[in-house]
Each structure stands twice: as structure tokens, then as C-alpha cells.
Length: 421
Ligand code: AMP
Image (cartoon, rainbow, N blue to C red):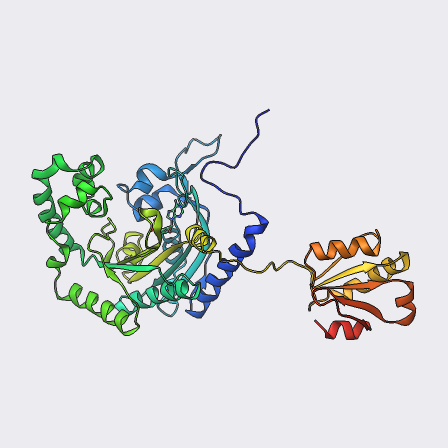
């Protein structure tokens, strides 16, 4: 019989990694809460049409990476798909439940696993975890800055101070349309020199050629028309306000005119978080931008929206590579050792009281296998202290408490014991 392993591109997060993983998740929740975001849970799968309308049919995610969910007995074989990202589901929920009636903007977040049929490699998984933050119902550039500040402070407070912010603006749709026509005019006569992907995109989604990783494409783009030159006063002032505020907040950024999102409903600010020194797109720890057109696209009101998705797997890997180790948090603070049968019976009596709501974190031996053996076990578990209970202690009404790091020993009543933790 062959052994079944985890599917390619998925991974188990084992107990020894959970300490860091949980810490990261808790940390994200804490930051989200401090910035006023409320949690929202959305379905793991949605109508495929939602992703076609929100992510766009001529994107890698839709063309190659969607996991279709079907039932063996159903005729609708591609009606549903696993969510490849959270924004589409969040905006769908916002529209469906009329969240525009709440005080605006509505700030929402979630920490969820998403699914993309990518070619797996380090930092690129088919089941990927993202911390997603959205500010819906606000068109001010200051909302873009608020969103960026959340990400910036998260990286700073996690100690990933080297993470770089790359920033761009996509302006408005009309400006992009004019720019794209100029870009096409420039690239068409040079089509032969483009990579296969970019050749294809010249017709379907030429904006995406700008973020091609192919060196020859990049070289060709050096002298191509620049989107910023097509901006009118609204786009110029939106971008200026973002940069001015980031300067005020001392958030460093690199302007990257090739940072694009290829769909019509994106506008103005777009940004990515990068870990410097590593090549390729796997070093992106997150990204986001403004998507004012998505709500109307999903039959919602014309409200502004900006958001970002941070890649938890990659942030986890970056912290792990830095030796970001946290103390074990499951070691017992108090390990109970029965010295004899009466001791074991007594432990059974006091356990519920000892574990009631407050500290200490208790572990105990289910059987009496000798005080020496149990002491060894307590040391292995990195217990902070042991409590030895036998007939003599029960008679006295005082237990022996031994602190394992210092070797100090004292006699305590149950109340005195509880007061120590
Ligand atoms: P995106 O939703 O594609 O804008 O990605 C946002 C962030 O999620 C990226 O910057 C990565 O950190 C992370 N990410 C995207 N795709 C993957 C993947 N296949 N595996 C792991 N992390 C990913």
C-alpha cells in the first residue's frame, strides 16, 4: 500500500511551529483591532462567477490557478471554486448584507487560507494563508495611508524592519486607457522581442506587461511611455497626498512605476511589501491598493475601497529564518507528583480547584511511578515547579513545592500555593 502524503503545495504546521504561528496570528489580530478593523468570516468556496468578475478572467489566478469544487453527482461541474483570495468574498458580503448602511468606512479583516493551483516551491504554496485588511466606503487618499500604516507598523513591530514598501499609482481608468493605447503603439512594432506571456498580454491585458519579470521585457520597457505622464489633476493630487502623508509619518517607500494591477476597477494607489535581498516575486510579503470600481462591478454602491493582503506563510518563513524563537508556552508551571496512593487520590481531589480559571498551568502524572522518575519527567517537560504530595504532606496540610530552576523548596498550603501563581 502506498503511503498517503499531504498534497503538493500544502503543509502541516506541526506543534513545534505552532508557537510562532499562533503568535503571528494573535499579533495580526491585535494590530487589526488596534486599527479598528472588525473580523469577517467568508465561505471557503464561492460562485466561480464572483472571481471572474472581481479578479478578472485574463489573470493568472483565473486562467491557471482556480481550484474548481464540484460534487460527483452534480451536473454543474464548474459552478463553485475555492477562494483564491479574500477581497472578492468580503466585498460580495458587504454588498449582500448592505454593510454600506453602517457608519463608513467599514474596516474588515480576516486571516484565512486561500487556494491557488500554482507551481509549488519555497514560499509559494497551493494553500496559502493571508491576513487580509479592507477599508470599504472611503475615497480619501488618507484611507490608503491608514492601510499602509497598518502594514508598516506590523512589520516594524515584528522586527522585520528591513521590509521595503514599493509604491505606485494607477491613476484613473480614462488615463490608463490613453496610456495603454500609447503603450501598445510603442510595443506593437517590438512585439517579436517580447516574452511569450507578454505577447499574449499585449492584446488581453497590456498593463500586466509592466510587471513582467522577464529581463528582455524589462529592458524594452525602459523607454516606453510612462503612466504618470498621463495623470490629470485628481490623480496627481491623490498620489501627492499619499506620498506627503507617508513622508509625514516617516514611512520610507520606493516608487516603482511597474507595480500594477491589471483590472479596470483598480485606481490610484497600489503598493507591495518586499523583503530585500531575495530575488523574484516570492520575496513579496504582501500587497494591496485602491479598488474603487469593484463595488459597482458587484452591483454595490459606488463607494471607495482600499485593502491589502499580507502573506502569512512568507512572514512566518522570514521570522523563522531570523531565528525568531519564542519560549515554549505549553510547559507546565506546576507539575503534580504523587508520592503514594493517598497522594494520587488527593491530587484527584484538588485538581479542579487548582485548574479553575486562573494560573498555574498544571500538568500531572496519571499514575505513581516513583517520585524520582516523575521529577525527571517534570524536568523534560521544562516545568517551572513540582508539587510533591504523599500521606505525610496530607496529614500536615502542607505540600512540598520545589522550584526546578533554583532547586529552592518550601512547604505550602493550598491557598498559599495558589497565591504564588
Ligand atoms: P496577492 O493576493 O497575489 O496580491 O498576494 C498577496 C501576498 O500573499 C503576496 O505578497 C505573498 O506574500 C502572499 N502569497 C501570494 N501567493 C502566494 C502563494 N502561492 N504562496 C504563499 N504566499 C503567497
